[in-house]
Length: 321
Image 1 (cartoon, rainbow, N blue to C red):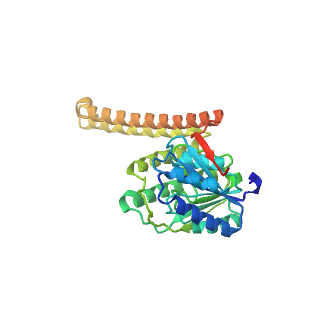
Image 2: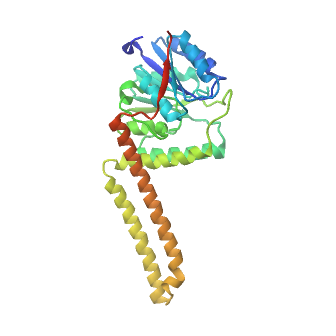
Image 3: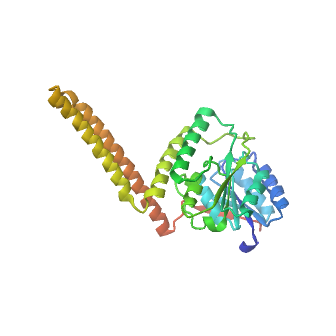
């Protein structure tokens, strides 16, 4: 099939999903055939250690609608999605997880909203079945912060189940774990975004790769998102605010110490020296580390964009024939 004849691509990152990949393929095929659109299924194997790749390769070998992208190692979900986006050829691109927690049967709901003129359609797990402490609460906090930072009024940034117009993601550059904040990144360019409810079901097989460590990575990505959306073109404003608060805190501490010194005749260094020194050092170290991290993010972004280097490497793309 030629690129301009494909109307819809479904991009699915796979990591150790041998138990469900064949069922996923069959359900996606049934759904896409029922839509009447020309389509392709882009399976991206993200360095699976089980037989996921072999099964995905076998599917691609017998069905011209399937493309299996074999990455050289496990890069993570964001690079796997980026590889899928870059390989896909459809005018509409749908992304979803490969563990069947996202129902292929809901794809027509996304296509309907795209046909109504939206650029991005984002899924919303309105009734989540996840663990309350490990997933629901951290996710709700992260979504509230992302909504506030980006100004995009959606409830669920974290789900991969989304649909995009091809032209809106052509210039999109992903890194870190920023795939969850794609709507926020695209909103800066004027993308028209809507959210629709999706069903959240238990994994039919396997176990989640989610851990508490991801919560901390998301927190750092939220800081990066705030910087990119608010200060990427005027970083001095960002650091100027940090300097203001640092100086304000220093003045308040100094005023407190001087008040104790002259009003109560308390020895400054004897009574307050160690505490003030420790607080000042910790605060400055935090500012320095945060600033260094943000500068590193920007340098990394410039590096990848300037050199056209990808955040993933492909071993081979498998198709029929």
